[in-house]
Every structure is written in C-alpha cells, then in structure tokens.
Length: 466
Ligand code: ADP
Image (cartoon, rainbow, N blue to C red; front, top):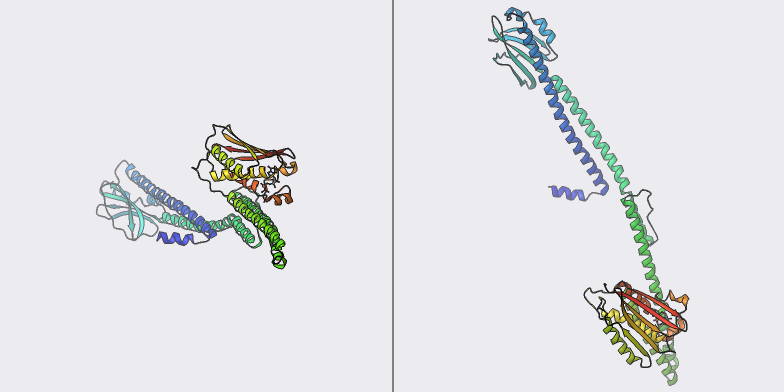
C-alpha cells in the first residue's frame, strides 16, 4: 500500500510534489499542535469546573455549619435566598434528608428529574445525565433533627460551548493554513523550479540550434545559480572541444586531399598516356608510390594522435628508460648509418611507470625530427639523467633549427615550419603534437630551444612518481 502510494507520488511532477509535501507537512504540524492544544485546554477547563463546584460546596457547608447550633430542617428550608445567591448558571443546588426528601432546592437552567442519593462522605464525580456530561458534588450535612446531603449538579454547557468554539476555530484555521501553504508551496515551487525549466529550455534550444546557447545568469548566489554556472561552463568546454574536433577533421581532410589529388593526377596521366610511354609509366608509378607512402604515414599519425588523446595508461607497467634508449639508438644506427648518435645515460636511472611503447613512440618522433632536420651536421646527442625525482632527457642536434616565431606553435597539430619542405621530407606536422599529448598524460613536460642554423635542443621531464 505504502509502496503503491510512494510509486504514484514519484510519478508526479516536481512542482506538484513540492506543493503536496509542503501542504502535508504544514497540515501534520498544525494537526498535532491543535490536537495537543485542544486536549490541554479541555483538561484546564474541566479543572476549573471542578474547582468552582468544590468551592461552592465548601461555601455552602461552611454557611450551614457556621451557626452556633446545628441547623434544623426549618433553617435549611429557609435558606432558599442564600442558595439563590450562591448559585451559578447551569447549576442546581439542593439539600435532601437521608430518605431523599428535598428540603430546599435552587436551579439555574433546565435539569431532568434527578434521584436523590444520600451519602456519608464528601464526593465529587463526573457523571453523564441523559448523554450530557456534568459534575456532581455531594457532602453530608448533620442537622439537629435530621441528617442530610448537600448536592450540587453543575452542567458542563459552558465547557461544551468553549470546546465547540475552539474546535471550529481550529478547523477553520487549519483549512486556511492548508490553502495558504498550498498557494505558497505552489509559488515557491514555481520560483524554485524556474531555473530548472530554463535549463531544460536552454538544452532544447541547444539541441535545435547548436552549442552557442547559454543559460541566463542569476543575481542571487544559491545552489541553482551554481548549477547554471556549471552548465554554462560545461557548454563552453563542449563548444571548445567540438570546435577543436571540427578543426581537426578539416585539417586532416585538407592534409589527406593533397596526396590523394596528386595520386589522382598521376593515375589519369597514366590512363591517358602512360600505357604506351614507359618513361611516363615509370615516373608516375614512382611518384604515386611515394604519395601512397606519405598517405600511409599520415593515416598512421592520425591514428596515433587520436590514441594519444586517451592513451591506455597501465598502472603497473614500469619501463627501464636506459634499456629503451639503448635499443632505439642501436636500431636507428642501422637504419641511418651515416648519422652519429651519441647516447649518455645516468647509471642510477630508476624504472618509471610509463608504457614502453609510449616511451619508444616519443623518442622515435624526436629522433626522427633530429635526423630529418639536420642534413649538414650528422651528429645527434641523447642524454638522460636523474634530477630531483624526475628523469630529464635531452635530444640535441646541429640541424637547421626552428625560427623563434614558430617555436611556440610546433606542438600544434599539422603545424610545419616550412610547409613545402615538410611535405618533401614526408612530415605530417603531427609528430611533436603526439609526443606532447603523451607526455602530458604522464604528468611530464616537453620544451624546445632552437636557433636557426645552430641547432635544436628538445627537453623532456618525466616525474619518477608517475
Ligand atoms: P613533422 O612530422 O612535420 O616533423 P612535427 O610535429 O614533428 O611534424 O614537427 C613540427 C615542425 O617542427 C616540423 O615541420 C619542423 O619544421 C619543426 N621541427 C621539429 N623538430 C625539429 C628539429 N629537430 N629541427 C628543426 N626543425 C624541427
């Protein structure tokens, strides 16, 4: 049952939920408060009625017993005026003897016929007379020529009237409070949910018209303002990353278009003339093969750069930098026998948590560049040393160098200092960008110092604690 109600409640709109919860909470509080108040007032009124009846009884008995002699039947019968004075509204006072014969009686209000009930001891009771509650107080009275009972019957009309009023006042206030709380809950919910509705609207607009839409800021500093700000910041990030992706796709298509167009040119040349002319055939085939190789490298680099965005970093793989560098240099010496590669590695280098494949990839990019851009002096120096919890690797060449205005941009994707020469060398402009991204993922840094005609020095810092 409770599950069913809570299920139905959960299906309601947030605004309705807030209004219902607000009203329910207020109703419960008011109901509890009224319930307690009603009972406390009821008890207090009852007490007052009891005190009043007892006081009247005590006054009457004191009056009868005050005379020097005990009262006679005649005295009692003559005390009508006194009783009248003592009597209250809705109250009956009478004195009867032990046989139940009424000696004197005074009533204020309508009373049913009540049987006399002589007693020996003073008593005050709450009784029900024909369905209506009343207090009855009885006290024994000893006279000269009789023994009797003084009886006071006090109807609780006043009490009932008061409690009736109280009940109605509470009910009316209760209903008013529920209506008021529902209205204020509705207004509050509307105000509270406005930013959420705005957020939904902004999201819908973004869905329809792109990433430029933002939510309006709010002056007040509350949780919803924080949510709006986070949303706007997130949208800024998404827009930025979307534009970067777009730029990347445009750049990549542009880079891919050149070799494909060259290939297309050679193939149509071959198609038209090359079949019969062996000279054209040879030349075009060679050029086409060169372009295909370039395309392959470009596609490979594109693949690497995408992977470098989110490389799989394994936590437990540790790489021996010294061994990796030695192996790499050995391989390069075989591929480029005309170059002199000087390797100097600190013996105390610890193993660090970087994947061997990533380390090799970074070093191949740097060494390839050093080889590619140093055609005159064919010496390259590679050093690795430990310095304050970090491994510092330098790759130094005496090549053509990079003009200072280009230095800051060489880590950008597809950035080549000299577009034409880059293409001739088979460069894609992606190498340094891949290295930079990978190193960043391992919390390292890469920087370049270079001077045109003097050479280039690339520095990598890899923290040992990664
Ligand atoms: P690429 O694949 O074209 O070499 P990179 O991102 O590796 O792309 O390098 C970007 C540009 O930086 C290159 O086009 C080149 O002009 C310049 N560059 C990189 N390394 C060196 C170096 N050691 N000496 C001179 N220029 C370099």
